[in-house]
Image (cartoon, rainbow, N blue to C red; front, side, top):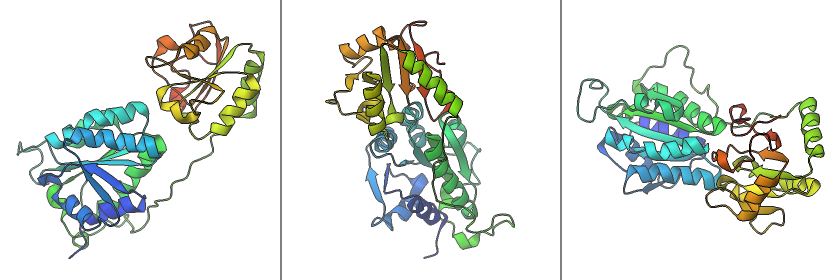
Length: 315
């Protein structure tokens, strides 16, 4: 059989080392389901009972593995059902790709059955959001969607009309600028190093502290040894928001456990009694659990400039 647009989509997912897709079949994604079926030895499809579960599972998968979570839903209400789980991914900063179907390309916008333009609906939840227009468009869009979700730590969404999914790739003529194979599936982190001046200022603030507390979120998950070393050097307890639970083991001598609604009394005591706060990779949203304004000087280490000083004034 001829290679279809849906085949190209699933092959692009494989290029990005996607191993599992959570979803619910529907006639708006028949082409994609067939492409998954014929590659079931390479990529696993986990069928859920409701699309909302698929989005939550994709988010949980991303949290647990650090990989791209992928969910799949049909057109109209099927795609709409993904939104609750996708907002969970957005607000927790997890890389998730949502794939949805649309109605026949020449009936979109004509009040046909389940005629919901999901790319417009998903605009607020996404860091990348696009409609695939033809088989020649698939590779570029899928590659950029995967890259955006991973690099920007958020939700990407792609949608494709049901008839477009089954079109042979060879049936579509590329534009002169869309040179085959020009996209890359290589993912690399750029260097995020503070300047020497910033490091010196941060060290001076921490050195002047007498009762220091460290708040370590999901951004600290890959820095366990460094986190323990800083805690040892500063003599500072590590308080863990829920997304930072695995930054240090719960039985580590450096941590007082969680904070917030499900936190521990020692962690809250540390936050209420500190004169200096080191925030590592966290935008923990419960502002009422932070030190009171004016109580503590603060230093924050974060990959995302949007989150710096978002919950507590920092220097």
